[in-house]
Amino acid sequence: MPKILTTHTLHPRASAMLTGAGELVVASALDADTLATEARNADIIIVRAPLPSALFEGATKLRAAIRHGAGLDMVPMEAATAAGVLVANVPAVNARSVAEYVMFAALALLRRFRVVDRDLRAKGWLAGRDHTILASELAGKTIGIIGFGAIGQAVGHIAAHGFDLNVVATTRSMRPALDSVGFLSIDALVEQSDIIVLCCPLTPETRGLINRERIGRMKPHALLINISRGPVIDDDALIEALQKGRIGGAALDVFATQPLPSDHPYFGFDNVIITPHMAGITEQSMMRMGVGSADETLLVLANKLPVNLRNPEVVEHYRRRFPADA
Image (cartoon, rainbow, N blue to C red; front, side):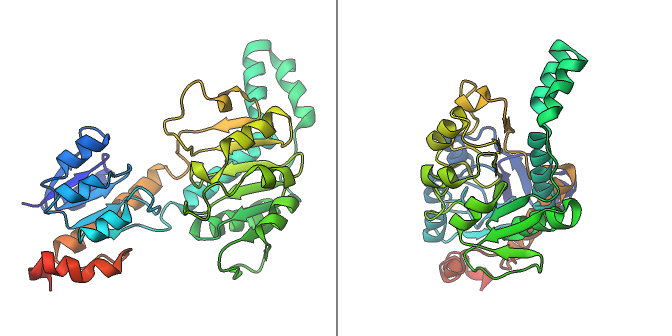
């Protein structure tokens, strides 16, 4: 029976889909050595944690790495391709969950929820109310979206149609997908936006994209929301800006180091919301991601290519490894 290794427990519906198709095993730990060891006799690995390149050198039976979600930065693509392992993902299925998180974060920052809640509990009713004098509405503000894939478009739709925000965006293609969106260069977007949302993938081009110079271009009250990947932001530059009161605040769901150390400077700011990489996680999105990854797994086990194959150049190598699939 084929072995399906998953880095995390799957949604019950996804687990039920895979019952009988193979032996479903949850990794006992997520460190590189454990994952490489437990993948050695696996046929499929379902990915929700970074995989080490060495895993692909020792997993001679491995047919596919199926990403439980959209981002591919957890899979070392060159190592997988060189080993003849198919890589697939499940795009767009958590876009709504992430987009709703963006609006939640923007509202919490503008309504000063952290300090209202803290002082209401510690100091009483009037102390909490005092903060509301500086609270602000969403309507009429400009939200700038960096990266306009499925998540960026979902953010834009909710922002424009649900909260009367002006929506601008920047993307590699610069092709508008919605009539209500204005497309700008990244520097123009940074300068004009009241709320800046990072929805781009982590690539060599986007690493450090929000640097000291671009933070310096932001409006003094601007909010920065990161649901992309931590290294898209220059942490030192953002911390400096927050310390100097140079921007209005930030909501950060992803970090260069995860878990974020408990003594990290970000925890010291009242105008920073910290969440544990949860923007895309809801009961509904976990079901959709789990079912999607199970669908792709079942295709591979049935000797078919996954629908969302991300390294098509591997197919010839893969068929040499598994000639019955030709």
